[in-house]
Image (cartoon, rainbow, N blue to C red):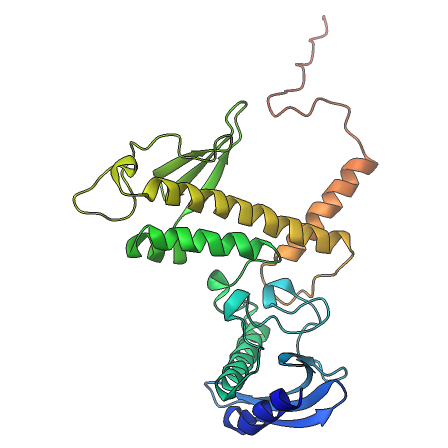
Length: 291
């Protein structure tokens, strides 16, 4: 703990921060300057456990929501600054301390922008919630295997995974606009056909079956994107079921949608419908009374 504190304190001033010892680690004040020149000062509680560091706002000094998945603020009010091996917070040297302060500064700058614009900057490049991030990471690795063109399109959000909901059709489809890229079976977890053009951008064009190991990478990308969406939804549904409230600071919010799903589910339980639930069911035609 002592080494991590000293490393963080030694470079804090380079990031507009001061750090003093306090119970559990330290207390920091950090000034964030916006492009227009406005300065915002945050007071943070820094928790230090050995080499591991985390931060949250000090109670009574809140400028941010105390919880918001889409703003990367955890249920315990701590800041979610990253995921996986690249997550900052393991303070073993000066470089790690600088990376952590830099990440905190950027995180707070994004939070200020979200307060004003009601949109969290770079949300399209953020991490999915909970265990969904693992599936997101695998999908990103598969996209990289499919070449720079595919990877760039994936990062830009140009692909959409759709589930075929027709009876007996257990499969996923990958679309780019109105172009079908691939179909994947949910039974075999593999491409249904390799005859479509490989989306890797190869010249001359080849089918997916003819293009190295791209059939496997493409199936993995589609499956993991689907699993990511399911896990992300499940995480938010769990938050809603636990009674966690939406902070209301963003125009669109996954938690708010989950809360609405919960409310709709409760309404259906309170007012059960006795009619058939099939999507193909239609109410019987009204009989005509004889004149």
